[in-house]
Length: 175
Image (tube, rainbow, N blue to C red; front, side, top):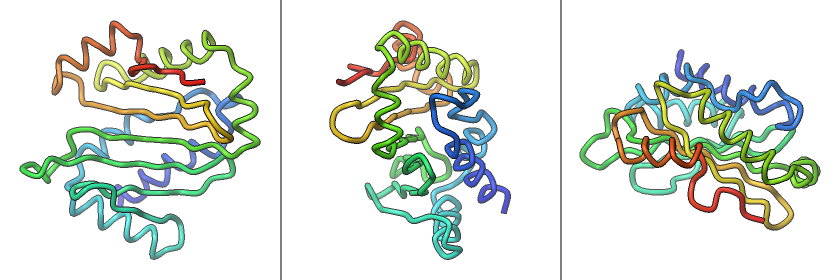
């Protein structure tokens, strides 16, 4: 049952608006726990959360099961991605936060420099165990934060790109 509690802890982190919280969006412990889950374990945990009325899920790819949790500041989406030949542990984890329109208004007031500083801080917080690449979509009514996490050393090129870009992924701030 520990992985189920780990997933709930991720959701608790999202209960406080991004502009006022202590800045921890991703937890190393939660990342370690999620990277240790097989596809069968992950999907079982997500189904348990839905059965308990705490979350919903969606299939996004053949080897992806997305957890959806509604929080006061938006929707938290967690997707570990598994390779078809390696279902014992994910090769990456995607975490997205789609903010409510009210929270989105607050986030859109941040300058690009402030947002890049947050992205770099989140990247640094997960080192040395993980590489985190982030982009923030500020287009439209709702803002979405997108984090892609890899175990450090598994994809050395991603580690290099993340270090050089300070955690920014592609066009990391889209306005």
